[in-house]
Amino acid sequence: MEKNLIRPLAKRTKKAKYTLKPRIKRGLKLLLLLTSPILLYICYYAYKEFKAGLIKYKAFGVYIPNQYEIHGIDVSHYQQIINWKSVKAMNIEGVNIDFAFLKATQGTQTIDLQYFQNKLRARKADVPVGAYHFFVASKDPVQQANLFSKVVQIKKGDLPPVVDIEKEYHQSSEKIRKSLKTWLRLVERKYEVKPIIYTNVDFYKNHLEGYFESYPVWIAHYTKLREPNIEKDWTFWQLSEEATVNGINGKVDFNVFNGTREEFEELKIK
Image (cartoon, rainbow, N blue to C red; front, side):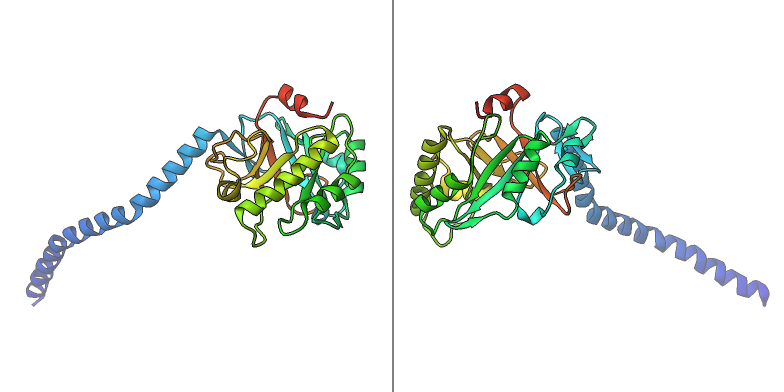
């Protein structure tokens, strides 16, 4: 009886091995088919990151392209009270904060709560500064330019004034461009320097592309695999809004300058 019991068992085991192999092959093929797109994406991502020369700086918490010499931040009252000495002292593998754009005004009446303190303390810490106005396209551009001009006093070594335009406020492209042109003209007349236009890629392409070609552009673009994809050469690139910088509570915008240190110095107010 024992022999009779063993023989059928052996046959079943042999038969099971024979039928199991095709199933394994099919399973492996299916697994490869399902995972290959993921593997390809990982390889592509790693290659693009390597090609772009991106380095993840843990202290800053962001990827930074290594081909740019000049780095900086932009701040407003959202960052509250900033320790500018700590900002200035931060140096991670040769990357430090070379400039800061400070929000000064918005619309026709609003003055940023921290602008004057930020300007005073940043200058005292020897951080080059620039001031920006948040443009409201639905409001009078003349009043907006007048507000900015009354609040912002520019001195030698500062960066040019900036207009931050990134929302339509239900205005047409033609109306947006007309209002922006008025603001730029008045502010340029006041400070005798061309203001910088800050915007994002989509807003630029939808409303500004092909216009204002003589003005420097500061572009917001947070996709780290490539530089901002616009026709015009950009001057500043805001590459993240999630950076960590010593002396600042919470996250802050991080930027790079598209040029050499000599070109950066040339951009400053004389």
